[in-house]
Amino acid sequence: MAFLFANGVSLRYEVTGEGPPLCLIIGYRLHGAAWPDAFVENLARRFSVLTFDNRGTGLSEKPAYGYSLDIMAADVAGLLDRRACARLLDGRRHRAGTGDPQP
Image (tube, rainbow, N blue to C red; front, top):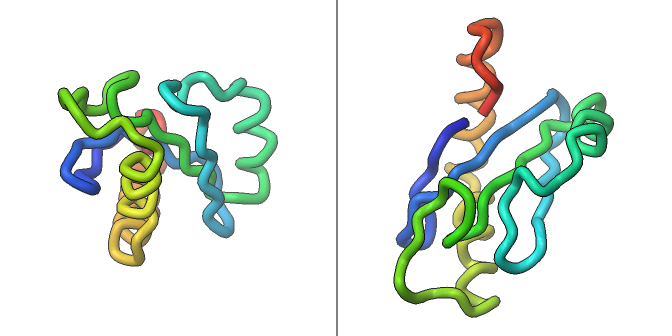
């Protein structure tokens, strides 16, 4: 598990698997653990699967405001910007083999 500051909030994310990046965006007001494990594991055979907790859910920051869909879309854009995506994948590679869940 790891955190990234995007669009003014701290978001919890995980990257599982190896391959081209694939971001799973869960429904409004849900968190990344709502994805069935078997579904993520199947995708992780071919992709680096990014799951995350939406703002206000799971272990992500819970600000008092900012729950419109356009703001939440900007959160995803912040996670996926070029620099953030590179950091996400680098973090996964550095933690491989530690026994910790891959972020």
